Amino acid sequence: GGAERKANNSADQVPALILDGGRRLEFVRAISAETEVRAKRSVWKRIVDLVAGPPEFHRMVRPYGIALDSLGRVIVSDPGVPAVHILDFEKRKYEQLNGGKGLAFRSPMGVAVDAQDNIYVTDSALGIVFVFDSKGKHKSFIGQQQGHAGYFQRPTGIAVDSAAKRLYVADTLGHKVFVLDLTGRVLSSFGERGLRPGQFNFPTEIVVRGQELLVVDAMNFRVQTFSRDGGFVRSFGSLGERTGSLFRPKGLALDSEGNIYVADALLETVQVFNQDGRLLYFFGRSGAGLGEFQLPSGLCIDPRNRIY
Image 1: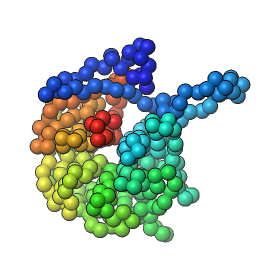
Image 2: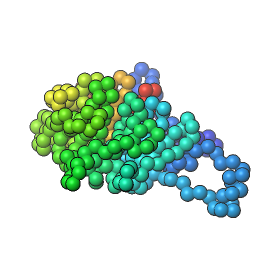
Image 3: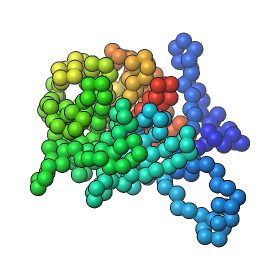
Image 4: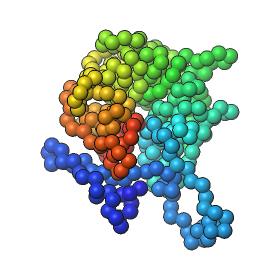
């Protein structure tokens, strides 16, 4: 919210990064509660606040996953509440999802949106995916099987390919990626535990790019790229002592040029690589100030190349 308070120019305290071609990476704003989304309270509402006490506002506790829908709403999973925050800056509205059909969230992690703005949320503790429509109404569960546990051990990362009508889910404890249709039927899966190309050691985030899938292979300290059917294509990253190494890779996103952004929870920076895995630059550092990070996780980039 600092960027909105021009009085002390706090956003200006975060230096811009000058990139190749004279482009700049600039800090815009920070958001931590619904008060930064809602319209200013009227004089009448403030009088009511004096009498009845100010309303309780929803705050982010441990934001993890992030996605944007076609309306520009920012959708954030928060296992610390546990809930999903929906921030609508256009309409200045806030909404919170807490689960669906008699089942509350226990640990909402990954979040993704399809072309109809349906919202998909993985719950790593329950081992299922919640599906909501664009208005936040619960539609269905994916992975829940009557009478016994579902087929996910701990689902975290999720990606939707609306054109191909495919859903990709990273099962972190199962060390594999599931390929499903949008109704939740499992079509295939790939991966197993190991160090070799195409194997995983706790995979987390997934991003779809054209005909390829990028997967954060967290404890192998790398990002692997696969074809749609799970064939290994390439990988980059390793555990090391220098920038460009991946220590605890979490969030994954791509900009309009295909550059790969990786949030690292141990380095507490976001590193940016080209498609060949060469480090281009990084931004952020450890701290609680604007433009600084403490255990960064989810990453999302909108069509205007704004990085959330």
